Length: 361
Length: 266
Image 1: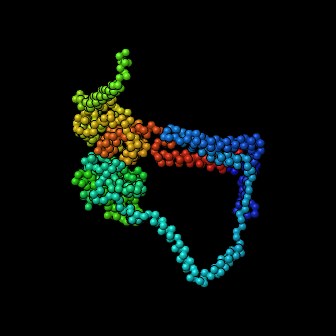
Image 2: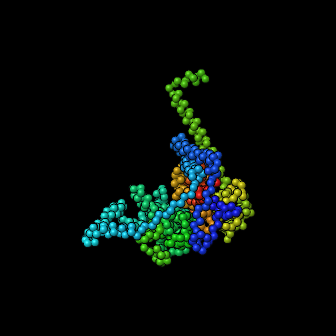
Image 3: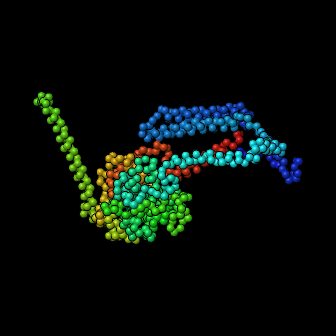
């Protein structure tokens, strides 16, 4: 690969000594190009013929690849739920395209390396611009400034700047109005569908949950009952993304921390928390019933359900928001209110709502 | 024969034939259900048979009492088994997790140490100590009656976060892990949901009714039977194994082609 060993035993052409030539004692002269070495294909017509054959075989391979693709695409056609056939089709499509592209690429490179001329060329750097050219450009700009009279007539200049600043505003305003909901923008992230008296229902069946349905160690994935009142599918999904909640029941004596103001947030060992990780918003739902740990699968943030979901490991900055719950007179679980802080990761307008201020937002 | 062929054109011949057919089908059906019921009750009886309970107690004292206590009341080394139910024993012993090889983050699956009869006897003994989840009825293990599509939805909501969207399992905290569900027997999948072994949450019948569980099992079976239409699964681990593959295999390929591109032809 390297260019060493171009010399012979008597004269090592590659080694240069300082102080020889025109450039003084320590500098090294431009060593020039290493001596040109002809390739096998340059010297032997037989080798060149072989290289030609290799290149055409590679091109042929590309042709076969394209044919294989079309066999997969048209001959197999729609697989209609036959997964074994689908696998064969996927393989043919992938292998076909891969060989169609690789065959051309490898062929062209091999062609260039073995058969195309390989003589060394030196292309000199273009000379730098001269001072006179530079002055010429400067005069042109000054002429334009003078002739347009922009310096003499500041009114022209100021109105032009004003017009240029205002002209893009229509586009920005129309972009903003793509979102036509009432509470526009980041304020929507502050609230979810949970509210006082909203029933906790199973996802996806939408049935209400009695407190007695949850045995110790149970974890249940719930959504607010009023979610189904939203008719637009997209809107429902965005609201669901904020409201997804995990309900779990543990022994009431296992709950270690209940801070002031949260005494009535749980019901007989049943606690609920947002499933959206406070780090970057992955769904945290890997619940371990004995350690009471909730693990986020994306970056291994671990929350302790027995201590108000505080972070015990990982990059998350804040505990998971807890949903205050209670039961109605029929024994169904209901929310006491919305989450008391915005769910999910920190964002600029969120503000630091952590009461202790332990975690900078 | 002659009399029969003469009467076959009688106006009531069709009606008589229909009645006869209905009677035979109905009779066969009721006979079959009785046999089924007999089997089912036989199954339930086995767990309440005093002989089995006694035999189970002997097995328990010899093999399990060291950790779980002589009366299954639990010790520092193992939890109490009162009220865990027959399903729990059937799962833990049937999948080889118990007896435990060593203390660790969680019991690992290994070849079962007891045969089916001994497992049943152990389960019968533990079930006799206190009410708990029973071994599932065969009705709810019949995947042909399940709806795999619905099971898939339930699986993605309730199970996929730990067991992986392809049921290949995944890591939990501090060395614990959710095992792969490939090749696990339906009764063990069912029992795991009702009992919540190790750190798995309980999915009781109030959360996922038995039909839901059957749908989930049907989904798992269907999924396994489908193979991997997308090509190599690389362990179904998603970005982890795919990333490893592309960073080692893919980059090596790129470097090799770079070296080839810049090398001089001989």
